[in-house]
Image (cartoon, rainbow, N blue to C red):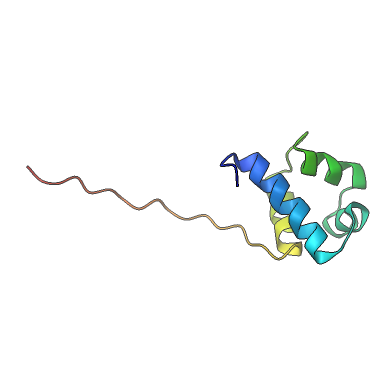
Length: 77
């Protein structure tokens, strides 16, 4: 993956949809948007709101996780 979160989301979305063997119209109906919107998400033209992104990821078999960064301890001097 490229490291850019928008690009990664587009790639995961496209790969997951194809792996699940559903088209953009079907995915759109499941998550409540039209086919054109799904296409724009996959192309990176627009980004979904967080709630929609989570629905898409869930439908495609992925989960959205937020973790706290580990704290870095500086050595004592």
